[in-house]
Length: 204
Image (cartoon, helix red, strand yellow):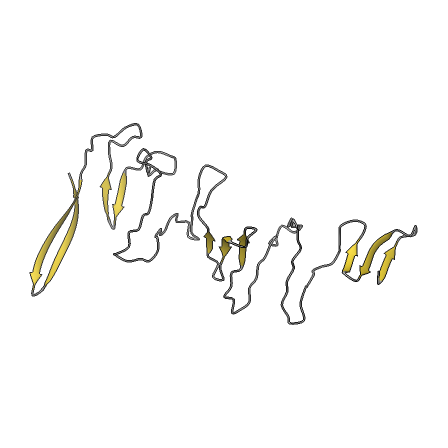
């Protein structure tokens, strides 16, 4: 060893070997903060077999912070498998990506924006008329999509722009006979080569 720190009995408590600093007794290194840099200014910490626990002692301070640079283009964080394939990530803009699914340990998943609105917009891929956007997809024909109120009761209307369509005879056991049929009506007028149309939603 290049240097050793021993107690009164000669037990090595810490040492500086050719591989660097190591603590022989205990598992703590005390400091206000640690900075690790390479000569080029970058910082890399690779420890094989490492398990990290972030335990905050100050309730008013974030437990874990990932901070990019001003011109950050790479992901802020990635979760990879042993082969290096990315299974989840947070990109430089703060968007969260998952390889396949978002799952919950509870019975529900809530997506709420900063204004308190749940599902302000849900869309797949590009936003264009030619794209088939599937907002909700069930696993089989026996599955159902339910629109419920906050207390769990079934919703009674669907809104299209400013118009409402009332839903009745709704229940989960079997397929009821509908009491309201939603129709789309159009009134069109041709002017030169073009058609001008008005569209109406009507139910009876």
